[in-house]
Amino acid sequence: MASSDMQSALRVFHLPFSFMLPQRVAAERGYFEDEGLDIELVERDRQQVDWKYVPADWTLTGDDNVDLYPVCKWESLRRTWSLDDGKIVAHGTFADLPYSLYTRPETPINSPADLAGVPVGVNRRTGQEYTAIKALEEYVDPDEIELEHFGMPTERLQALRDGDTDAVTLLDPHSTLADHLGFEQVLAFENHIGIVGTDSLAGDELDAFMRAYGRAVEAINDDPQAFREQYLAMLESDAEIAPALFDGVDLETVRESVTVPQYEVPELADPDELDGHLEWMKDRELIDDRADIRTIVSPSSQ
Image (cartoon, rainbow, N blue to C red; front, side):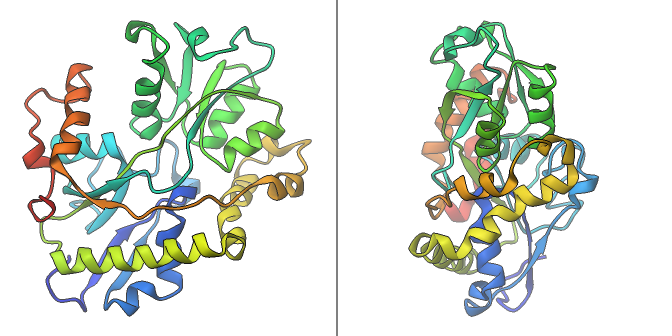
């Protein structure tokens, strides 16, 4: 586990998604090491993930001995309160990477208002679930919002193509793949992420982590093309996992149309700002009504 000793290893959970590229870059380019941090990126085998990368049935800080992990901002509120899985230390949008909601062109869905009573395919207990609800509320009565679990991005795209659902949420580069598969985008909304740490995470370790992360963000934003292959690696690995989804698709054409986004550095957790999100969750019975923001956010961030 983490301690105030800057030489001890920090176990950092890594999500192989586009918005987490700076974390990978900081590790591979030695930016964490330059800050005196020994970082171990903890990853799950994609072949073994049938629901979501952040486990629903066990804790990361407890069962997996992880010191820091990224997760959807709203799910960070739920996990820290309901599972006692660490405290929120930072949050932000992380990148100019909105979620997109796609439909098949032959459906009668032409606008977000047409999604009233239509099941939308998401990955439950991830950013898509909460952000989709929040985005759809601007167009649809909350009682008419329906979400349905379809798992990972490739599984959601397959369900859309097979007609098992009429709408799904996606992030780039899978949204670019959806364009090439002929699906239509009807809504885009922001992706919000939180970073959760253990109670024993020292303030100087968090500061050093953020400096290294920020250095990676600056490097990517200064020369996006230099990181293009790393950004596209996720899409190519999915082509191996779900080859049928890529039938009839020119992967090289998809690659050429993908744009590496601009990234942002997470901000230290602000309990006053996060409290509004917590109250929204309480109003929709997505979290225990007794949940307290001062318990959820790390004292070192307040």
